[in-house]
Length: 328
Image (cartoon, rainbow, N blue to C red; front, side, top):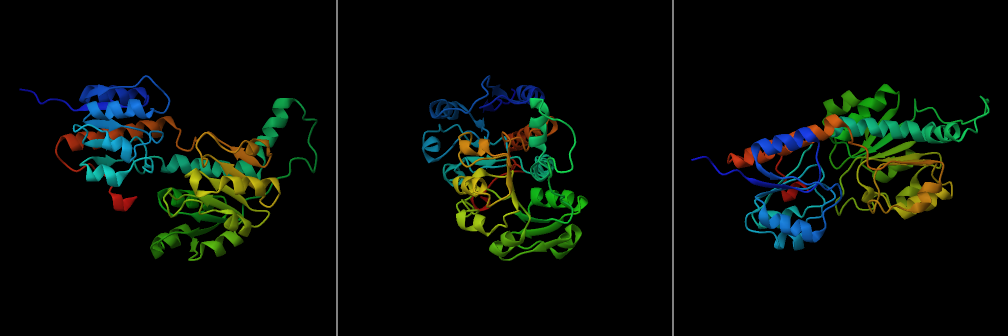
């Protein structure tokens, strides 16, 4: 007698190869929707599933977990970030949580460098000039940006992505500085030619570029608040491809409008899609729709990790990417 397959419910559309593989391995309920699941739909899905495959747009808090059915034993998140899931409550109810770390490292680091260049070299302004048909030829003073070689890059959060950004920035001739909860191993630090700052405030005040690469936790909420933003040099720029909640967006907007910060490149926003509309008006700001990890290769690899986590769980072993409350 064949073993009954796990019931897996997916909340969003995934790349076709991932969906096909899920269908081959599990009793899967795929989604034809490409929008966040509302609470009612999510609650019903959690009642009929052994495994839920959500994404970062699906909030799974205490209320949703309390209403989950007894069948639900695994939340296999499609994505590395898990701040949308109450991991502690899930564990207390016997529900394991997994994620997909490491997959988006190179793609997000690429996008970070793209934003640094876009802001400092005024690429969107040049593009807008060409698209409007207003360009009337080269001029010695036209569209002057800044050279990034020799600039001090301050990285907040020196994990996988922060280190990948440091490697790229090294190739561009930037000076690498970082602040982290724990100092890197001396050999790693030497390989990146990176300088550790115990004081985040002191680092912020001396950098030409600040790049955010830390998760959103209670400790990092508004870590770049109005006080710290005011520490930045007027000619400095700030880049965020991590979590929007780390920056006080309204304070940042005010300072950019006042010319107290030279520019910003943002791929994430404090309130999701509801970002401060005044940011759109600023020529020194580059806004992207959360594209940091948006590559075909990355999205498929994320799905492959989800599948490995589910299959390992089904086979009675600990999934390789289990998330524990103390890790969040």
